[in-house]
Structures are given as C-alpha cells and as structure tokens.
Length: 211
Image (cartoon, rainbow, N blue to C red; front, side, top):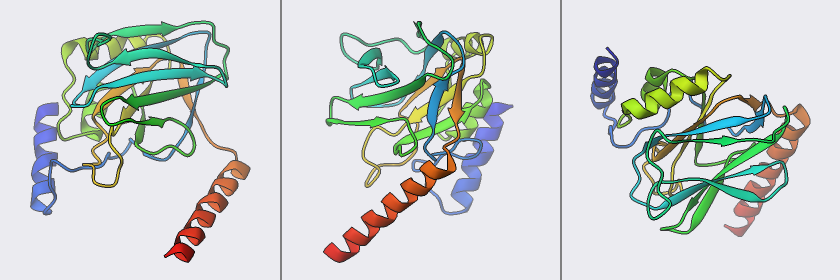
C-alpha cells in the first residue's frame, strides 16, 4: 500500500510539471527550526537512511557541552543503517543539538531554532517518514525495526538533513535521516521568535544596502 501511495505522489508531481528528483518535505515534516530536548534520562539514536555521496558525521551536544560522535555514513567509522546508539546521563529538559558535519565538502548544519538544511518530523511510523520525504526514501527492514524499538521507549523525533548548501542543492532533505527516542521539539518562546525575526530583518536590510 505504501509503495502505491509513493507512486501516486510521484505521478502527481510529474503531472504538475515538478521534478521528482527535486522535492521538498511535505506535512507533517517541517523545515522550521526547533530546539530538541530530552524527555527522560537517556535517548536512543537510530540511523534510518542514507542517500548521500558525501562522507558525513553526525555529532551531538548536550546543553553547552562539547560535541560527541554518533554516526558516519562512510569511511572507517561508517555505521550500518539500522544501527543505534544510547545517549545516557541526561535530565529531562536538556537541550540536544545534533550536527551533520560534511567532511567531503566541508560544512556543517545543526538543529535548533535558526536551523537550515534540517527537516523535523514527530513520528515513529515508517510510512509517514517515507511519504513526507518522498521521492527516493524507502526504509530497509533494519531501519524499520530500529524505529519500532525507539517507539517503545517514548516519543520519537525524526531529523532529516540536506547535506549541501540549499542554494544549488536538490532540497530533498533526505540525504541522511536519523531518529531519536524520548525527545520533543521545544516550541520557541514568543520573545525568542521576535528576536529571530528582528535578526533576519536586519540581515535583509544589510543585503539591500550592499546591493
């Protein structure tokens, strides 16, 4: 059934004159930046999907601490899809920042209120992940098993990355996909949103003046 749905979505994109090789996430995925917080004393991370030619590492940071390694899609540290890692020693409410570090074309992108190159989905349903990040995403059995194991632990946040700068990229946000148990997206405080808006407005003014 899910394969038929994805085929239907692909056909619809073509009928509208859209390229299925260049798509953006669809609801319930969002590219609006969110902070990710722990809801328990541990978080289990799972590597769900890789469709990237570049060599990238996924790092994590607790509050304002240092970064630690979680996964890699290539090289000596490569992790098989479906692999999991447990992050212990957490307190509910701890801020978790996940950073994709592209080693091939040096650059990095992190989760957070001002994030770019990141799509967020609150789900543990493989069908939802595949549909939201279609076309081109089919979770293998090991990834589906890992996602199911995370769901048994608590609320799951799925984070998907576009691994190249958005300008000139395919903007499909499905190069590397990860999931995290016992996590929640923290809605930014109104004041923080206002400051972010002012900052973006200031950047726009500077760019206009330079132009």
